[in-house]
Image (cartoon, rainbow, N blue to C red; front, side, top):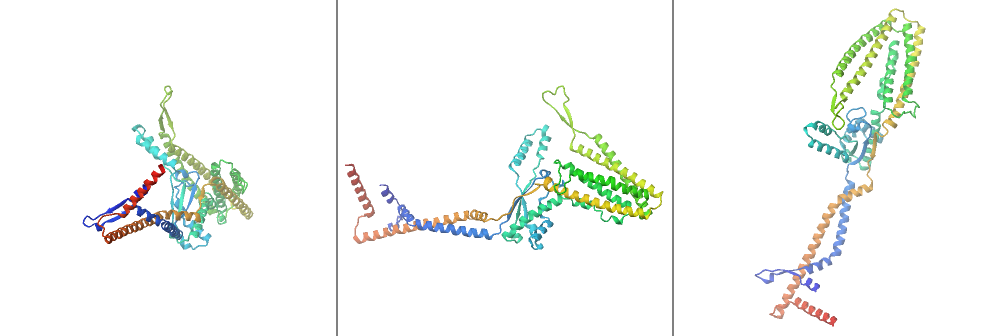
Length: 522
């Protein structure tokens, strides 16, 4: 019966003025046509999907999408947005022309590309979820804060997040690189930036420049000694800073020295070699030009007296500021505070800074006083004695030449030891390439599939609409052709009765089915 019902489910659009304008739409006929064209539709849909994917893949492979890499920084200070020197950190330093020039040189590419590459590099970062949650919580505290705790809430809100991981994007099309060359260049650039980073923040170029005394021969002997004394003082201060930062008792595998070893070496050169030469020059009045030497001593004494006055004034101002400084006060409330002082004072960062400045100025003032006494004794000795003999001059020149070798060796050992320390301890993981740039085939196919999904859906929907429309129109033509043929047959027979042959066939089938069911029951 279900089959008969389906067959008889028709929709008739009838014009009331003329029965000949009837249009019959049979659902069963449409379903038959859909089944008839099903295989054709499937074949066309599959072919169209493959062609669409191939076209999208071609566009993906031919289009120069930006390539990306991920880098991170993990040194002390990056969490505050600072570089190792304590200044604001800028990831844009990766665009430094020196870095790009070095990468281009290593790859043998034209240096005229520098500006195009700089404009093709961009950077992005993402705030980790835990940092975002913390900042959101601080905002909630500020919104709910009462007037008594608004300053504390505002202090929490002032907390900022500074990224330590950055995505480096390189627009290949804008830079004029093909895919493979562009990827290779970006990876080379990232490596060259690592070398630049260590040279800028970890190596010792400023130290080498500060202690460079290769041209000491052009000065008088006393001035030569002063040059070496200043250089040794710089080295010792530098080693003291390194030793203060080092909490690993670092011993270099390159030189075999610790920072304390080198500091002791510098003290030995100063107290034995340098002081011996200096005293010999003073006692024997070794000079190239007595008048010039006296003028130099007078100038140094006058300049040091000015420094002494300046340091004394700064020290007095700092002492006054520290004495008058109002320390932060906190109130303590709660159980057990009845018999105790509920107030407590805290030293702020500003107070600590003032105290550190005082210590520094005191050290500078003491050094200035020592230097004044030193140059005064030199001047007085030179004024009261005659010039030294040629033998004394030759001895001083030989001793200073030997001193120069020792200072140069000390500087070299210090630079190598410090570089080893920065590379393998202090900045061992300061800069890392977490994910290098890559353009593997699987990644490109994935991008092609992702890019083609929307297009494939649209194409398949369009094909399905066409498939359904063809089935619908075909069934419509078929059904109305039957109607026309039936009407013509009725006219030829002259039959005046409106007999629906199809209905008659259905009735006969129903009667046959009923008879069959009755037979089965019996």
